[in-house]
Amino acid sequence: MKNAGICLIMAFIVAFFACKEYPERNKASMKTRNNLYFHDRELLENHIEILELKKGESALIIVPAWQGRVMTSTCEGDNGLSFGWINHELISSGNKLKHMNPYGGEERLWLGPEGGQYALFFKTGDPFEYEYWQTPPVMDTESFEPEGRTDTKALFSKKGKLTNYSGTVFDFRITRIIHLLDPGEIEALANAGLTDVQAVAYKSDNIIENTGTNSWTKDKGLPSIWMLGMFKPSPSAVVLIPVIEGKIDEYGPVVNDNYFGSIPGDRLKIKDNIIYFKADGKERGKIGIPPMRSKGIMGSYDPENKALTLLLTDIPDQGSVFVNSAWKFQDEPYSGDALNSYNDGPLDDGSVMGPFYELETSSPALSLRPGEKYKHSQTTIHLRGQEEQLDAICEKVFGISLENIKTIFQY
View 1 (cartoon, rainbow, N blue to C red):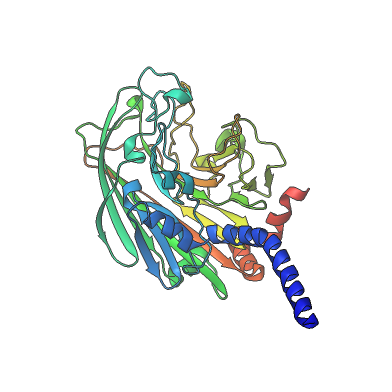
View 2 (view 1 turned 30 degrees about the vertical axis):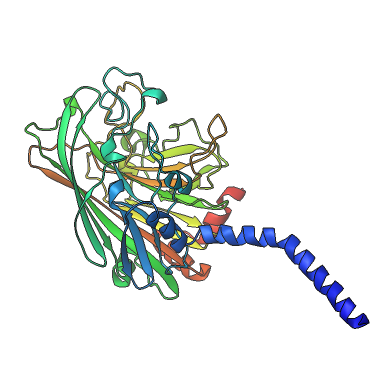
């Protein structure tokens, strides 16, 4: 009886401490679960119709109702890391917001410019202030129609009409084709072998056609295709963008960092013609790369998850001009950037939309005649593995080691 009593007491002590420790363990497991692909898919399936492309352990989720945007992807099956940032709270609420619905997603299609005398996000005569800023429904709440699909490819289309700040009307048709790539295609694009590396990659072709009766001309404002991707930040994640060396008066500034105020040196660095930008979701800031500086590639590295992301896009033709989205009347409305990256963080009132970070690409300003089309393509590649394997890929693609990225903000 004495031994039975001791055993009972010991069992009680073990259970007591296990219960005390359980909340922390549960909290950690939920944090891990929230980063997994199946968790994001379950949330989306419960609230919206999805379309999934899949090949082996690689998969991605598209929502036709949200402009055929890619919400997230994985390279490790259902229990793999989910790369796209998804706004669980907004989607679960079923609410629709006034100015924009930030559902998230790692690749969505917008049209620029956002601000200025040729703005698509402000009505004629309105001040360039947040109260009057409005994302057009064709880029926010209207669906793109599915036109066909296979296990690895999906096609969507949408007819639309927009009027810019100066009163110019644009009639157009957008065609969007998303293609999940196979390992051989990924190896060719990354110019590296994928031994012992998990990979998922997809290419999107985004085509706009002038379906109106008038040509689109610079003096009345031109639209552009604007691709934006939201990704999950981490404390040590860094965006990296190689740039072309050259004189400022010929190539423009190496980087524009004045979108929301100048970015301090402990968050933005330039070394050996590579721009490094913190992607931790802790401080709001945005950078842009002028078209003459663009090499058509950007990416990020997340040491915490051993995840290397590459984003490849069209290199602009010599002399191409890009729309300027600044919220003001502009002296140079075609002096915009070809590549952008945004890091989310608290607003003045302490609220945070995400947090997330963004990788963005834009087409040139589009002077299209009636019936003429333009295609803007980009490819997103996510790689996970041991740092030794990822380091070899990083060296080939960017010419730097992962150690360079991990330590860049320590000096």
